[in-house]
Image (tube, rainbow, N blue to C red; front, side):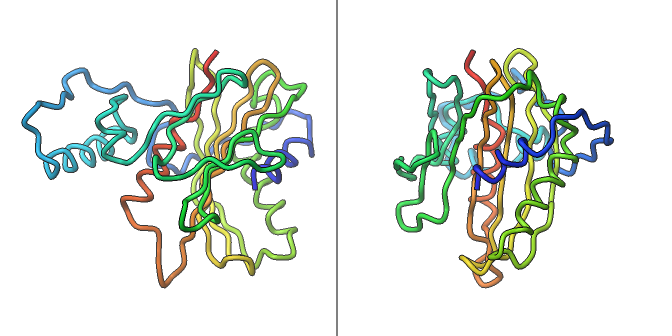
Length: 230
């Protein structure tokens, strides 16, 4: 899937000026976690869960805390060679696949996965390619051209600041496919050192077994954690 996103960036090199229409619950830039949000030693698991969801509700993102990441069953993965980092589901296993810089799959269902692709580009920033909405439109067009796609719809588009003000685009969309049925897709992209970094998280979201709130929250925070290391 991430390879299809990469192809979208190769479709055009001119700058777009479409007005961004953010749809994610988080703001265009990550709010700073409040220094008053501490986790006392006596905090129970139930209280921790309540604090977790309160933090997300109020801020749109999690505090930069290993305790909260652990509660969501996330762990840090960093590729120092390629220069990116993210939180990934701790139970998902790392697998090798041609074309993927890094790929993690759910052990019981490989179609639920998170993949990162890194490719050289002539762009210095994503803004040189187009607005977040422009890129989202390209993504959906690419998906709809696939024979296996029955329907594709954008759910959310957002822009945030990464390391040192790095421009990061985020997208959420759903696909109804003849290969696996309904799927929810969370994607993030940024350009650094003339390389395009793409994260694509795919998870089943069928009517009979929809994406549950805990899993959705885990995947969203994995999405928001994608960033450059240099």
